[in-house]
Length: 322
Ligand code: UD1
Image (tube, rainbow, N blue to C red; front, side, top):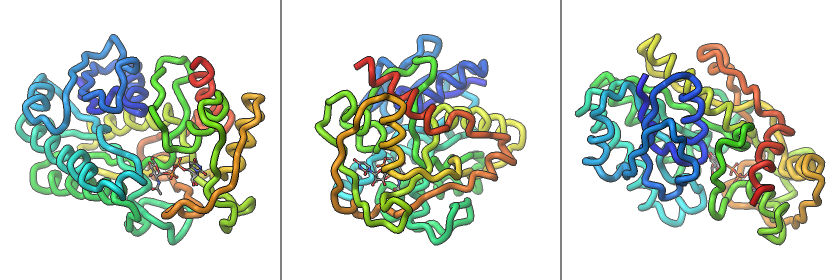
């Protein structure tokens, strides 16, 4: 298949591109390089520099016998979305509408969409399955949910088939070192731990140690980006074979606390991670874990790369070189 990967120069997108190339697909990457990076581009994939806010550029990219779209482009910092909702409304919602309308114009009928566990909000039960109530607590999560709803309506009205993949906490790097780009000013836990390890930051601030968890710090479900990438390949196969739309969680069902992640990193890399406790970060639920049985049963997907050790080892391999 010829797959247009929108946002294919980003952290998750570049891993998806690698998985598609290994699967034998033809890949075109469409990315404005605002957060995606040139260094993440694979020479085997055709690259078009463009924004999802530029409908002409999208049209030129999509009307080249594209069989399916993978949409990863968008803004993803939860905190920023609460301070600057307009940026998220335009980039995520308008961007998604532009992609869907261009798909209609170019008669492209399949899309895999990168959604998020942020659509659920504070959990009412664990592990979270796909039937859990949808009550996003951030504007970022709201935009992801609205994008899923757009997909639903473009399917009902126009027959665009979609798979939405709800990622839990994406971590790790390609084990062969083929993805080298590091995020600038990362906001997520593991990249911040790594920046402390290479002394780019003085210390890690642990947001809260008074949660209702065994060690008092928040628990999350960390899923290796190579496992996420593999799910995109399987989602495209599912779309091709079944012609149906669906939604899947992607996680391990294994909860890891902030302190456990710090301690495991110290063991794997052999360096001390300086840390201090700070007050809770607003909006952080104490515990989030995924039920991903649906993806396992229907997509035949398994999180094979998501051991804590492998997550840390593959991330450290990239940071260590900086
Ligand atoms: C959030 C979103 C997730 C989104 C991801 C992308 C929710 C519920 N989750 O994940 O959907 O894909 O952001 O950005 O909205 N921590 C510290 N110190 C730090 C940084 C983080 O203690 O400097 C802690 C946090 O409090 C949290 C854990 O580490 O408990 C993970 O945080 P983070 O990596 O930011 O991801 P989430 O907030 O879980």
